Image (tube, rainbow, N blue to C red; front, side, top):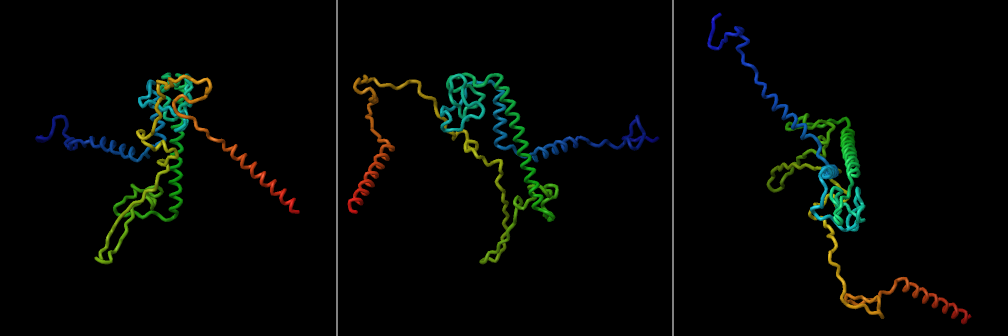
Length: 282
């Protein structure tokens, strides 16, 4: 066989002269496909992110809260759902005192090793239940959209593709699509085209607790009580054992019940005197 510059000694077939196809492009396509699947995943709600953060903090070693905790004793904030009281000093803990930290008063760990494991298992169950409930809500909303569409299919424009907004999804609902409005100016006689999109509020973003949606910097924490106790240097008077020693005079506040009783007794006396006058006139 006649040999040329591109033939090899190993083979004389014409098919061996064709260079192999470049298969390196398959990997970027697979990566791009994986990214598209990640972007289509729904975002996590505030409740799920809060539970995941608490779960992550429980894995770390405990210690003092860098923010100092809160000493409101559930007067200003909600009582803690997980650890409502410190078993060492008896301090009432509000929701701002995370169970992963030590008690802000006595600095003892709030959770025992067994209690930490039980709380981790509880939070894992809460995360799974919350994700399942949110997924059921999304499926229920998509089913309501499909029922609302009925037998009338969604019309696609030239710029939109059926694969991007398939019928039955939330994106194909008329509320979530962009609308174009044609307006005619009466003076210039020109047509103006304006487009707008209406996004309905998400139920997951609406929080019933005002502390959940509030930034951490704006939440007011009650500081610990002062270490130095203020006391009076004046000597106690034996004639007035209940006198105030801080320099301020006591003010008597009459009881509202006593005032009501006095008013009732006066009304009774007026009624009795009126009855006696009526008998005397007869």
